[in-house]
Image (cartoon, rainbow, N blue to C red; front, side):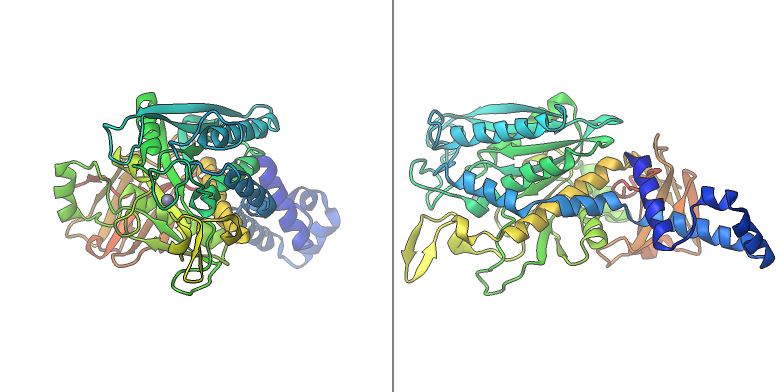
Length: 481
Ligand SMILES: [Zn+2]
């Protein structure tokens, strides 16, 4: 896949610049004579190689193809289908074939299975479930199974490393415990669910080095039960989760604040892992890392991929776990120490979430199909798809990164070798910058950055694959004296 693509890129480069490719250049006698006559052969050839290498390491045509392949029409059709189950409240009917969460999850499972059939069974689809009882929360109206639909596309090189995209199956109306009245949940969160299904359709056409999980979670509205269940399941199975991209409401562009914006979206990430140890907390006070936890690095990664491949978008990194006092399904993964972020619209409309369908004072309340902007949902789905593709094509991140350079005019970095990496990128940035603004590519596993004072920047290291794709940046987790 990768090699073919590099070839394609080279072909594209050669054809764009109307130059013969390297093989033709060697055999092309008349060109050799031409170059020799002007004494330019060596120079041009070198320049040529440099340009090609730079070109290849900066972007990958495959990622642009993935952006283009995401279908607005399919997302729209799937959101429609999901709203037609009437209510998808976690405690609603499970036996009906047309109404309630049972029918909804069976449809989601069938849909993933259909996608798998189209890629020679490349996706393994199953239910993962846990029982929740009235003892567990006042918001649980009766005991019920919280059932997630899990779809796994195995990676070819690192099958036990996973990147996960999640949406939610369940919905609610004004009363979270009401499981009979209509709750179409078109934006919250059929949009995230449909985006996840669409990402599976698009990415299943490719092979990746790491595994990708597409998941529909349930029990979100009453206490993040589905996410908690799957995070625990992942721990028990020893899954190495590179990151969770939780999508919750990715289809609203008309904000309650009056702003209409189909370019901006938010990436929420907690600052440092919730399960860090007391000694890690103490170390941070002296060595830094307050804004450099693993979820934050995943947020930066997503931000960078979007800036590179979808420059028309406006990703907003929000330096907090979630919205003020509110939650989402990435949190249970964060709780167990996994990197996870929430991707969502920038402008919410509160009259269209968690509301009974009604008209009051001339305002049409309710989370209904007509309010969703599918062109926007398509864009945010593409954001997920390219972030996952890029991560799943990259080698794993270095496990340890050591840093030193106290009272010196240079910074030393040393990191663990990553099998499968071609090289590494050392990143650094001003302490007040949200993004990794400076970098240097090296092929060894240690390096001194001369003339750079450790006190004035933050540093990190990412692994780079032969195909140019990069892992997330690892903030130093070891000190060198
Ligand atoms: Zn909700």
